[in-house]
Length: 393
Image (cartoon, rainbow, N blue to C red; front, side, top):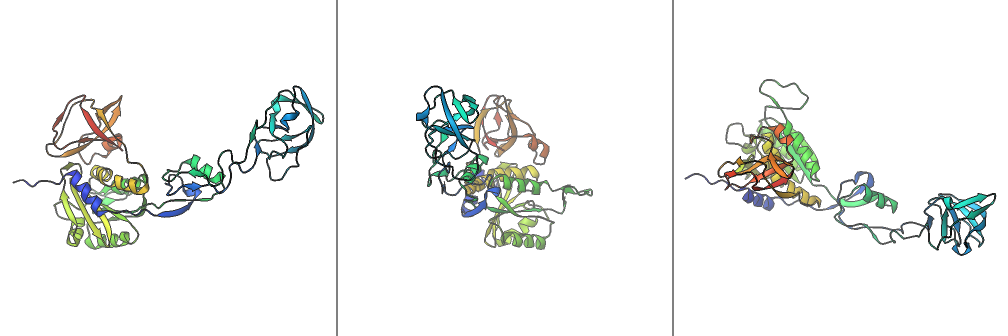
C-alpha cells in the first residue's frame, strides 16, 4: 500500500504545537519605530496643542471690539517663539504669526487679508466671532488621552503625533529573532564567480527579506556546506540568539542530506507532504529553539515560508493575517492528483492568471507572481471561470 503523505493542514498543526513565539515589549526611539507595532496605548503626557495659539497670520483681537469697520491700535507683535505675551487691553490689537501664543484677553484672530494697516493702527474689514482662528489648548487631545491605540502598525503620521506630545520613545512588540541557515556544497554568494556545478544562494536572500517583511528580525544568516560539524556549529550559534531557526536544503532522501543527518538523531521529524512545491519538510528542536527546515529549491523555500512561517510571524508581530481572496480563473488548469498545489499567479482584470510553470526551480516565474493559487489535493482539473483561493505574496 502506498504511503499516505502528511497534509498541509496537518503540518501546520504540527508547527503550531512546536513553535511558541514570545510576545514581549521593547522601548525604541521614534527614529527606529516605523513599521513597529504598539504593544499598549500610547498616552499623551500633555495637552495638544500645548497652549492657545493662532491658526493664521493676522491680528489678535477682542471680538467684542469689532463692530463693522473697526480701527484698532497695534501695540506689539507675537511671533511663533518662546515667551509669554502681555495681556491684550480692549481697543488694541497685536500682530500675531501662525503658531504664536494668543495673549490673555484676546479671543479671536483676524487674518491679515481681512485688514489694512495704516501706520500704528489697523482697519478690520470683517467681524470675527469668539474662537475664530484660535487653536485652544487641548482641542486636539487632552493630557491622558490616547494618541495611538495598542496594536497599531506605526506609520509616519503616528510617529508625528507621538513626537508632538514630546515623547522620544514608544513601547512596541519586540521583533521575533529568526536565524537563517542555507545548506549545500553547491552554494556561493551572489557576486561571486561560480564554478561549473555551483549556484548562487538565492534562498538566504529570500528568507532574510521574508523574515524582515513579516515583522521579524534576522538574528544571524549563515551558509554552510554539506558538513554535519559545520551545520551543528551554525545551529549552536543560531540557537543562542534566536527564537526560531529556518534552514533550507538537506532534507531529501538522497545522500549528503546534512540537515536530515544532524536533526533526525536529535528527534527531528522529516515528513513528505501532499504538497507541491515544498513536499519534504522537517521540524525539530535544537538547544531548546524550534527549527523549521525547507527543501532547497528556491520556489519551494519561498512557498514553504509563506504557508508555514508567515502566519506565525505576523501573529507574533501583531500584524493582521495576510489576505486570502477567492477569484475566478482566467483559463483552465490541470493539477497533480493527491497533492495540494501552490501555483504562481497574478490577478489581471479581476481574474487569476497563472504566470509560471509548476517547477520549483523557476525563480523568475516566482518573481513575476503576486499571489499563490491554492489548488486542493482532491482537484485535478479546473476550468476557466472556476473560483480559486489565492494567497497574497
